[in-house]
Length: 315
Image 1 (spheres, rainbow, N blue to C red):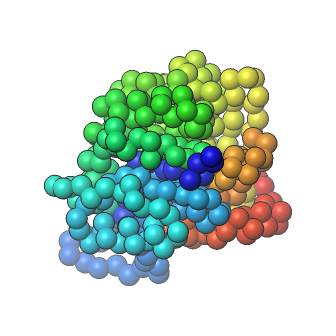
Image 2 (image 1 turned 45 degrees about the vertical axis):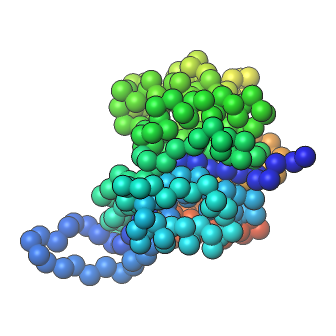
């Protein structure tokens, strides 16, 4: 019997309020006017699952929200995209993880973040069979899932691999001190998808080949580094290695670009495409995201993503 879901995305799911352009915070009690303001579900798990759903995958979101207005809105928005939310937990004593994103004219997005229910959700033994009723398990936001990061995520990913579920992993890492909690997961990871900056922070290395080898040596089967305007670099344990350039677009906001990359990559895997094509779809998802304000704003559907690839030049 085939799994119920194509893509299950577990981890960091956040409520975002975004505005642009912002060049500085008003002094004192002053008010500045902005051109655009929007709300979005974002995060390493949230943006990824929305892109997957927009591309037509049978998608499920797994994480935590608070008993607050932001949590109500996140659940409503996920459901509106056709995403299964039955494993989204209302976490007592936690607010919904939320961000204020001040998008710069160049697309950079300094943010103020309130940690919340992503730290509080937990997958029990009784939920594991349901959780792993999927072709791909994506874990997004290691380092922000306080209860799950204490060993539970490792147990779940190991069981996923044992059952033949494809595992993909993204992180929130800023220092080498984060390496131990990530390293425990890498032996259970088919595809590790950090940003170049995150991989450098974990390893202390700089060259992309060295970064990938460092992570593969610690157990990852394949490492895909997102490089921003420089595209993406893939290194597989079997020796496969290539670079895919970024698409040339007018950038409005880069919030969630790496997370949308993850959802696009999963789309290619589910479609049974070669790895280079999977990365191409991931790059296109990231690039389309950058053309709108708020994570996934520029991503429409799979047909539009394919048309974007055909019609848009690469750097």
